[in-house]
Amino acid sequence: MKEKLALYGGKPVREKPLPPMFPGALFIDENEERAVLEVLRSKSLFRYYGPNLLRKVEQFEREFAKYIGVKYCLGVTSGTAALYVALKALGVGEGDEVIVPAYTWIATPTVAAYLNAKIRVVGIDKSLNISPEAIERNITDKTKVIIPVHMRGAPADMDGVMKIAKKYGIKVLEDCAQACGGSYKGRKLGSIGNAGAFSFQLNKNMTAGEGGAVTTNDEEVYKRAFAYHDVAAHYRKPNYIPPLPGLNFRMNEITGAILIEQLKKLDKIVSCMKRNKEKIRKAIAEISEIELRKLNDPEGDTAVCVVFFLKSHDLAVKFVEALRAENINASVLYRPGHVDGHIFEYWKPLIGDKMIVDEESCKKSLDLLGRAVHIDVNPLLTEEDVNSIIEGIFKVAKAFNLT
Image 1 (cartoon, one colour):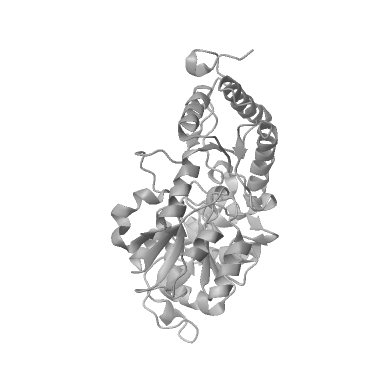
Image 2: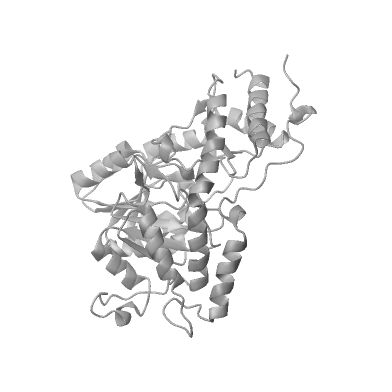
């Protein structure tokens, strides 16, 4: 017997909505408070000098580089700044082309456009990450950099991406903003391409409210990134940093101090999400009409969400409405007319004619995203919370004759 959906007056599986999804922020405690106060009391908030400089940014850079498994890390003010500095360091400029996926935050293509490059937008596959096949179809003699974005916490197919990059002599910048702490076949994300770009904005797996980092094993890329992130960088180390015209994207000591503490918690945060997600995926895999998102490396997934595909967009919309009525916050990743900066369709006003769209693969991407049901996997979910998500999905699936 089918249970009456809350959408139609039945009793919801949960009395209250699930907790909000801010992974790193939810783990802020007295350790971050102590770290911030220590910097404030030093009266030295600038990373390069002060009456009692604690060098927190330098400490964060060393520890983050070690965690990611690279030689160099540069702390910056945001994920967008990290993309800008990294692309500049990789030599992107006017006349170049940068390949980006059809599904990523607007910062990824916007930075390339700001550098007067053309953006080739290519499709994604069922991992919600860039399709290597679509990349290769869009390589030209002007292609300078490929940006695989590890979307919704899970790694892109880096073997496929790197094979193509090597074949054509193209640089790779990993956008790790949504997947900090993740890995691909044993290597941390941000250590596989020529450089990695990270964000520590409030939604991320570790956070300081804002902040970012560039990672690389290439000393020349690091030197150039350092020059571009600080207008006075060359003067600070004239025998090391090249004389390039930088802007100011310098991380401050308070941000550095917070990130040192957040980094200590990152593996725990990811572990909690992985445990919760694994249980949900395993349970709902039994539902015949649900297709789970492909994971290129399940072990490397940071597990920030569960995503599954339904047969049609209309069904996905109805499924989400029913889940929300059960107090399980869910969304469809693409709904025509609902502006979302993650979807290439809505980039045109900011990027204009700098955007070249692979219509075939991007059309397929919209179909995938329009059928994709997304549910956050909060690291603080209790066993009862996880069970209620599973119960709610089964309840709705049975009501819609999907089991």
